[in-house]
Image (cartoon, rainbow, N blue to C red; front, top):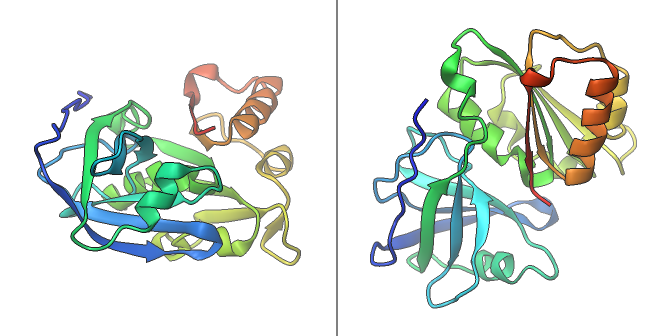
Length: 224
């Protein structure tokens, strides 16, 4: 599949449409699309107008949406995440991209089956992929601290989204993604995608290799 590496120059204007606040300091930033074409799994390099500081954020919206969205979690030392959270409708953003290759292989086989694993906002590329291709065969495992971080879980088909909570008792699955993986059978015919915390990715990779899971079926994208 060809990957679009179009770069949007600064003279193009991207205006904020809205900021939708989520629990736990996260939010979804929606802004004008300006004709950008992307493949689910790609990211944008973003910042507010006039600032030299920019960060990479995976696209959260689907390929058919008339707007672009990114899912961001505000962090204490995250200058860009704090600035973008304070954006108001009509504010201008600096946007470059799309870039990246994560998930670009996933549509090469229309009959493929996927196991998507994410921590926190690492769920963003999967949200884009599933929103773009709602009939895809997938299971999504989301590692979060509490259920309030189960961002937009209603957007996923019943029985396909599974939250693993590390700090909440009484949820559907109490424990980390690694606990879930140890206690569940893996289908070697499925492609596995890992996105989010680098520690989670390394630990899950150890589990997969110990089970001799086919390496050519594993794809990763580390957020931090």
